[in-house]
Image (cartoon, rainbow, N blue to C red; front, side, top):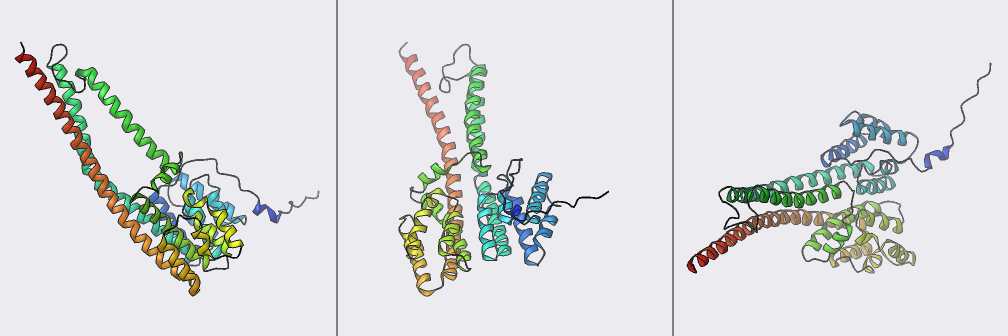
Amino acid sequence: MSTQPPPAKDPLDAYAPLEKSKSGGRIGLQALSRFCHNIGTGLHAGVDVRRVFETEANRGSTAHRNKILEIREHVSRGTSVSEALKASNGYFPSLLCEMVEVGERTGRLEQIFLRLGEYYEQLLKLRRTFIMGIAWPMLELIGAILVIGLFILIIGMVSDGEPAMTFFGLYGARGAIIYFTIVGLIAGAFTMTIVAAMRGWISLEPFLRFLMNVPFLGTGLQNVALSRLTWSLAMATDSDLSAKRAVELAVKTTQSTYYMRFIDGMKNVIGRGRTMHDAFATTGVYPDDFLASLETGEIAGSISETMLILSREYEDRTKTFFRVMTGIAGALVFLTVAGIIITMIFKMAMQYIGILNDAANI
């Protein structure tokens, strides 16, 4: 009895479109930072990329392990790491996928992962700082909301019929239920919007594009995007990538349509023999300091070194921006609490004055 040999594997199979992972969700920021550090450290030590992902598959939650096993399977079949990450159905953020592609094309994959690990770790620290900065004002806000609800309930309990003083017509148990329902709906809508944006269920891009034109906020968001762009451009230009491809990859790492909408036009400018500086300048959305540094780097033949230095400057500006925004957010919450209390006192005072006027007219 003869046995048929297994069919030969088509070498082009590795380049076929990957099947998207069926499970949703997105990796958490802390897990993402650890993941990048682990992969970068393993690659820097010279461990085979398949072995690195196999080791990573033994860490984290069950969902994370399954995702890593899928990536290892894709990589074992000859797929690039960036394509394997993109096939995870949004589990990994787009920025990671774009930067990993830059790393693979420039031969600096381990540096990219280590740098991304630092980047996400810094984001985690900024988020913790922000939460700690607004924690006390938020407690004050919650306390003010509860006090008002208690006031609405009490004035209904101590009065027969409609009391002389109410909170915008609300009193008693029914008024308290209406009040807390309204507050709950507002808080729930705000929370769901934040969660949906963080998980990628909705896009805040139109809103963010509007904010890009708001003084201070626009500058801060611009620094966030340019810190990514300059760093990835430094990596891409220090390789054998064409100018078109280097610009395309760098702009994509901003993850903002505010910048990415100009990619085709920028590539056309470079295709006509113009410089990178000309390509960026024709868009009209990049700041003068960035354009001046890029032009200097092109003239001196040191774009990579110039962009790397500039990326650190933008990174420092980004940290300052988030620290200021934390203070502003805390102040806004405090002012909201003060506004609620003042409104409540003013409303009660006007009602009390009305009661005195009615008594004087009797």
